[in-house]
Image (cartoon, rainbow, N blue to C red):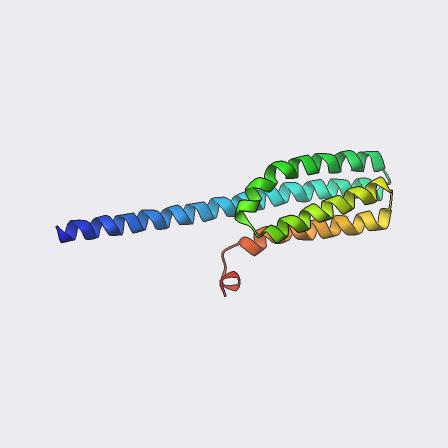
Length: 132
């Protein structure tokens, strides 16, 4: 009887470990893919800002904000809420700078937004630096 219980416990521990590893890989891939999509949107907005195509930049940013609204709920379960707040705040500032047609400030906020977005998968990636 004792051997059977030990085997079941080891099987359960192994299964739980595999589930944790698979969830970690899935969440890392989800964050990476989401950040790459957002980065492409930021690039498009920056291009429009650089060309002074303010209506196009505003439309692209609105589309990115709508996309972000759908992703934000999932990301908030995986990352620090301060990161979410930073992205929300930067998106709001960027939107106002685009509406005000402030080229330099809009480009600066877009660069900050890119940094916040790209930083997330790197920060959440399992590594010795992140563990210690």
